[in-house]
Length: 175
Image (cartoon, rainbow, N blue to C red; front, side, top):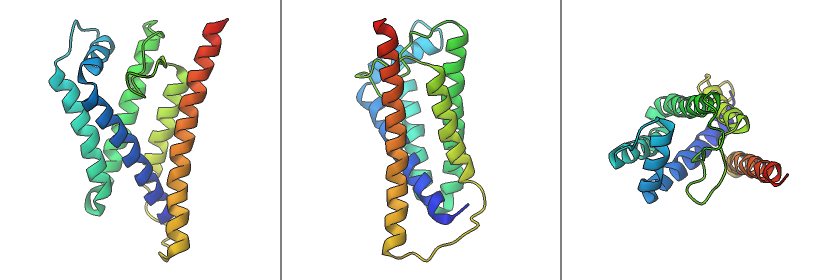
């Protein structure tokens, strides 16, 4: 895998899990209610939400430190696949009306196969970044710009997919 792709993917994943962790810490009660629904429990302790947020934020730190970035990529894969599995299980149980929790309490996006595929695609990005670096680059201003733009492109693709999924659900609900 080219070095610039790995770094861009890491920056994207830092953004993804940084936003997710901060959202959970800002809305602990809301996420506790959502987690309880995912786990078929009456309630979930707020400490569980804080723990998940801490794991997501720890993933960011692991990714940013070169000596631990491999562990961060593995953790990112595990989290993304775990979230995809939880959504899949809810869909199998017929709970397609559940909020996915992806964009926080302000979002009304329900779990869907599209969100599962999006998580699988993000896990694929993380797992591809685990491959040995096949092309090292000479780091100069243009290469830094390319890497930065690629990571921003990944963020935009992720955000656009979230909006497309949300819009398709709104349109389907309107008919």
